[in-house]
Length: 308
Figure 1 (tube, rainbow, N blue to C red):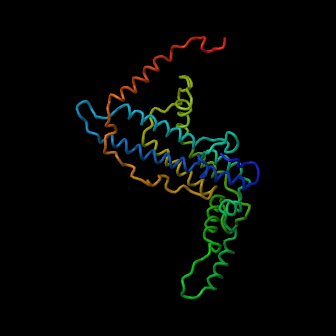
Figure 2 (figure 1 turned 180 degrees about the vertical axis):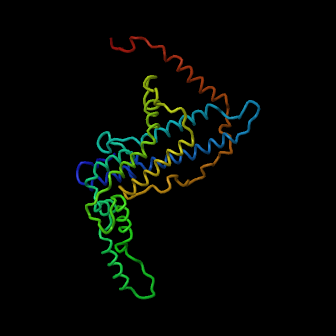
Figure 3 (figure 1 turned 90 degrees about the vertical axis):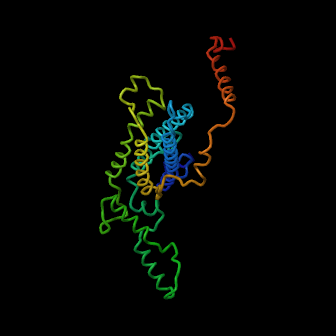
């Protein structure tokens, strides 16, 4: 993460929100796209296995390869959910790019996250949209009748008007009583955090089963009995919807369609054998590794302190 500091001006804090949401190497939007891509890819692999013909002893597919693919997918996906849902500081040496962290930090800044900041600093829009609308009307009067014309960006008042309407809902006020110092209701942050809490079981499972080698006593009651493709899709949908709301509100940037559009044929060569070479060579590779590993346990106590 770059050296953008949370402590400082509100503008610097907003820059950090936008950075962890869309530009950091581990940005929230990038992580969601990766989860969506992997979900779609793995769903296709599952369909390939289902479609494979049963011949006598079962489907003629290599269990070693499929088990590795499945193990890697489930581990990466559950860790990805945990990384996005976890709460923690978003700045400093232990800062994280997560939705939990973003929501936690925006809540902490609530007292400074006013209507004016929401419109001007986050969205970069003019606060007084009525004034911009009047300038737009004056611009129209100066144009030739019946001639098409381009409207300069500075006369686009609708985004500011829409931003104010959104903050009316967030703050529980209305346009006739709104002020520049209006604040977002606490219950809005409560609702965002409650949505994240729905993923707490996955976070706990990763903590004790994947990220850490928890003991039997530590794992008790914290491990998921089952978690399949439907669960993965539901978790991804939950995270995407939370990110769309939080990104729009606090970064002026939603996620759109999280599944990337392939820029290549993602199914290329799937109709070809995975391996058409000499099986004996694969056996040689396996046997060489097995021979080396079989000697790893031959260690002497003196190897621990070789200089004595």
